[in-house]
Amino acid sequence: MAIAAGRVGLWTGAPTWDLENAEHREAVAELDALGYGTLWLGMAPGDLQLVQGLLERTEKLVVATGITNIWTHEAADIGAAYQRVDRAAPGRALVGLGTSHAPIVERTGQTYAKPFSKLRSFVDELDAAPEPLPVQARVLAALGPKALRLAGERSAGAHPYLTTPEHTAWAREVLGDGPLLAPEQKVVLETDPAKAREIARTGAAPYLALPNYLNNLRRLGYTDEDFADGGSDRLIDALVAWGDLDAIAARVRAHHDAGADHVAVQVLTGRSPLDRGTVLPREQWRELAPALLG
Image 1 (spheres, rainbow, N blue to C red):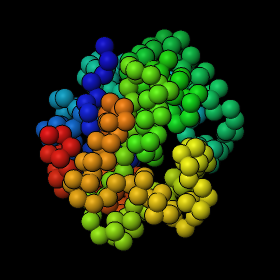
Image 2: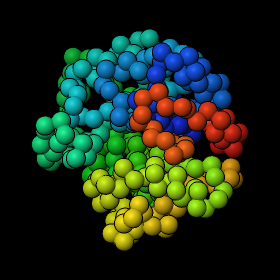
Image 3: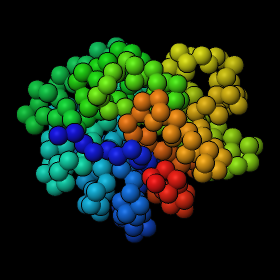
Image 4: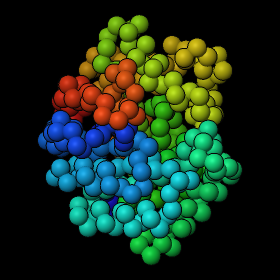
């Protein structure tokens, strides 16, 4: 049975969460009560311990990894971890898997070569594992056509990151009807253009140094001029929705209109989403809920 991700979720960095922190434990329970469908965890470890800890504090919320790096985890270990978590919280864990990026992988001492072949063989290993990760419980980080097709054929669907509604429309054409399409969308609740773009550039900067994202953005018509100096206004405005609640809701709706089943909203505040124990944007999550979930 397919995982019920809901129409809208939240994307956060896995290191953000510290379940020894009482406020963080309260925050995930509040997300459940607010009605968000899925909590995505960027750079999530494959042992799924954090996924399980978050699920233990909620009743309905799906918790998804977005993504777990296939270069640094074994397929059999991920399958066994998923089966453990699913026994405790049936149907509420979703494992996002991806090839990450050359600069990140090479820092681990590995050679980043033939990433699509690596992804395809990793999916084969998942299916052959003693405790498999079921097709309906996994999604693939996919931007280009080959990865999108693989996601549609060998997983529940695709979780594209750092994209636009235009990419969502194209991805839906590649995937066809049926597979889950769950893009991530960065947002800034700020109506002053200069302040909003400053926060947006801080949030986008780490990704504009990674070739996979730049190659995808080039497919969408952006150029090296757009990538320079923290990103052109044209690029930043396309990647990050900023403004009032109506503006944020309109961007999320644009993804849905383009074919997304689910949108993973990442609230940017100027802080890194990958810093451990970061102050959570709970006020923004509360403010957004009626506009996005109503």
